[in-house]
Amino acid sequence: MLAEEYYRPLLHFTPVFGWLNDPNGLVYKDGEYHLFYQYYPCDSVWGPMHWGHAVSHNLLSWTHLPIALAPDELGMCFSGTAAVDRGDKSGLFGGKDGLLAYYTIAAEKMPEDIDFPQSQGLAYSSDNGRHWTKYRGNPVLPNPGLQDFRDPKVFWHEPTQRWIMVVTLGQQVGIYRSTDAKQWQFSSSFGYEQGAHDERAWECPDLFEIKIDGQSESRWILIVGVQRQAYAGGSGTQYFVGQFDGKHFVNENSPETVLWLDYGRDFYATQTWADIPQADGRRIALSWMSCWPYANHIPTQSWRSTMSMPHELVLKQTADGLRLHHAFIRELQTTYSNSHQFSDRHYMAEATAQSTAETALFEIEWTHALRLKLNMTLAADSTVVLTPLQGVRFELSALNDELKLRCLRQGASGDEAYDQHFPHDYSLALGANRSIDLDLLLDRCSVELLLDHGLYSVTNLAFPEQGPEQTLSLHMTAGSMVANAEWHELHQPEQHD
Ligand code: FRU
Image (cartoon, rainbow, N blue to C red; front, side, top):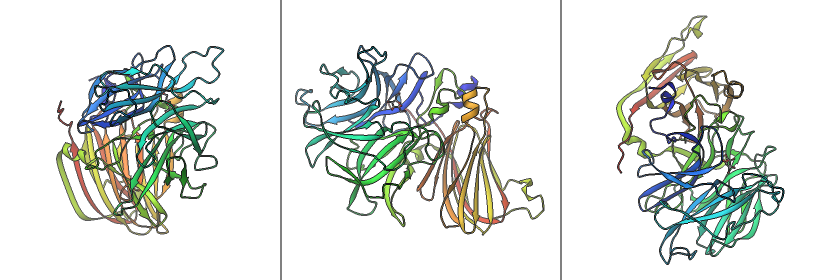
């Protein structure tokens, strides 16, 4: 096996070759989950953007399909959306249902007459995304005079009988509406002095309605990407909770409240699947598992970048207000192959002056993919250290009855950008508690951690240098705890096509 293939995840989507970034056009139709994605087939670094395409029945095994959209004389195909046009509201499908895709046309070269190279284009497909026709009247939404005008998310809004588009407008999002999916009118913008900003544009908005868990009421969630100064440094994703009436999004938190969808370094350009049948009712999100400051430099050669595990998002009431909670999709359970568990084990740090000598409390040898669920109740002033694989370390401390998670990652490849930006050391406050549950998913080059029933998601890449055999270990450096655990080796799911 080539060294770089050690890093190819078993259960996460990767391109066979070439470069991948944002998920695009996540839509469900006729039993298939579609995944389109920012793709450059000619090299494993970012280049003129195409839309790659794959389909799945279970969100875990994917069938690669031919490229859906390729650059043309208008420009490259940047990020966007797909939606089912039920009942042919666009008039593009001869009365039948079809698929619409909106993408940002980004002029590849900058002739002198193009000041603002980004506009929104439409493509449509009558055969479940196997063939696409670009709309003759493109762009359907010309640039209003902005450097950053991209990443349209489009959906049908039943109460106003309109198509809605949410799109990056510099450091805000713009909301547009349309009756025929082709002509668009501006409704409003949102974002000025709201949430987290850096000096760059917001990217990849998503807007959707979601029920409050256990209630009949619902809220609207607006997701946006922050390019360089997100929680853990680099690219990251925030969200707003509020109301949407078809024209305006109203944030129900104070403007300065920042809600991070994930607290890791590698969870960006998040989008959710459209048109999942109501009987299923899930809101499933997918993110690009990388970070712009080092994305082009991670240590693989023929392919580069992977998607996150799809997460189910659930909106729950907390003492601080409504918050999204994450769960790995339930389909993951179909990949369990070798399961273990224990309950109520008491652990204590070694009572010597050199207690940091670190005798492992338990160890798991793993090779490809592993899921560990751990529930821990720490005594006051205790610290437990989890090392899931070489180069990554989580330190969980209960100090003054506050739980804190320190996230450390090492790694050097000799590449300047990677060596400078990839290592990290940051912390996350987990509130006044000494008990916590943790759901950890390891898949060769990824470490995805959900904490406190999914209130916190922490997604990070890792490229251990020592090859595929890894040891997960748990140590106590201070105090004591009681733990329950279950863990499962994971195997590649069957391809059902
Ligand atoms: C986000 C992004 C988008 C853009 C795409 C280009 O990662 O910068 O804003 O459409 O990538 O590949």
